[in-house]
Length: 295
Image (tube, rainbow, N blue to C red):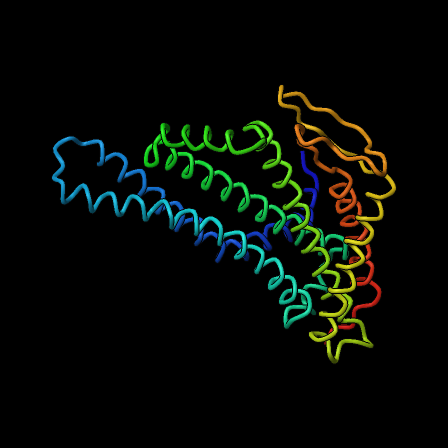
């Protein structure tokens, strides 16, 4: 039985090419982080040997502590390296020398932009997860094995005597909330940059595209924040993480606030930024398709 094979989607090929192009540099940081964690694990394994000399144990401790500190720094820098390529590759592949080739591909502007968002959004998510996991694991290890649980308990007791501090569960809730809010804001920041770069390449602005992208970015960012605050004024949706591990949801009326014994987290800004990101995506795609004038 014979037949014609179904052609593969050009969009998935585009995603594959964007991924391979970005992985050439970003993956180097993951390799470096992996090597540092191997050094850390090796130091932990060797440090359990009882027959080590005092001099060697001191040197091993230095390497051990350095591997922890450098691993946290590298995992943190990984976020910024990824963010740099989010901007750099977007400009180079669409509005640089590769621009003509990119715009002549048999894909739509939605797919061109969507590929960048999927690939670099994925890298951003991965880099952030790696940073949170690496930092959390190594800091927890440092607290338990270097600082010591007794000292930590003493500090916690001292803090509870000094004032009404949030509980551990409330602090965890805040950490998760801030993590989600931070990542949503990073994606919004990227979408605003993509919009500013794209709009600066319309015919009337393309001669000074680099300079034009700066005020466009500032204006779009101010609009983002203003709309987010305005939506919070209209409907201030909050989530409360109680000390008994339960969650409460509700709308906080104007003039009221959450009492100090609860961890109140505003949810409206997160939804506002997500909605604006979707709107910005389609606006940027439209400008790419209808208004952009390549040099």
